[in-house]
Length: 334
Picture (cartoon, rainbow, N blue to C red):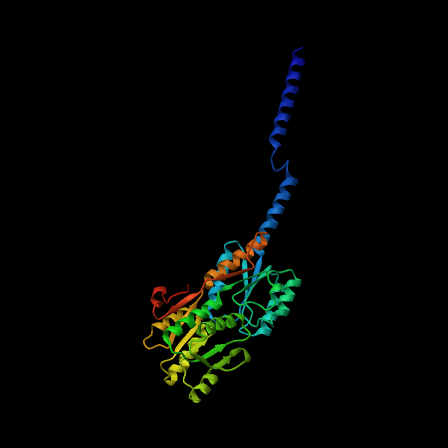
């Protein structure tokens, strides 16, 4: 009898131990090995998308500090989300820009921030991106075939030029002779000059000369030729600040005075030049590459996430001239 009781106790104890052991395994990795492996695989895939995703950036020329600031603004925004930016600098070479964008496609970029060297010549690259199903965020200067881009983010360029022209009318209420320095291959330049000409229309101004840098014309040779012709120059409107500063430099070296020179950008160097005593640099239609960069990235993220977005966004522009330049400072962009 005693032996049977001991045997019964042993069996009950053994069952209890086995039962407790089984309960301890419930909910542990051992019980859910397949499920956890799937979760880990999913997590690795998500992390791979975030960490490995690359976007492309191609501008007109990184020698222009405006595009360097624009690049940095985009880079800061995407790096916060774990993405990287592949940067190509065509150096104002439209053929090279097309080649570099094909390289970006081979490198696996998921989208491209693009400012074209030539609004028409960029089409082969745009078609290749479209075929590869890679969205394009067109920045600063519009391409001609807008159907091949998702959105355009830029400045109100017509207003930037208009602000310069309006200021010139105030400076020379009786009018005068104007030189236009433009680039027929860059849409933003075209819009700026259009805005400027609208502002000075019917105000006594004559366009004495037009210098189209898009045709390969030399700026210095053209200015020298105009100076030799003895044409009286009252003002020069340039497509951007870089060009305006070159014009000012050419004039200063030969002793030209009493000419109002305008550009577009609101660059630190242009603002510094305005503060120099006797400077010919009169004003600039100011834009903000920082805000444009931020808006471009937000637009891309909205597209990627299936959210609503504006297909065209224009950042406000305004005049900075000798009268108000100290308000904006010279050590950075707006």
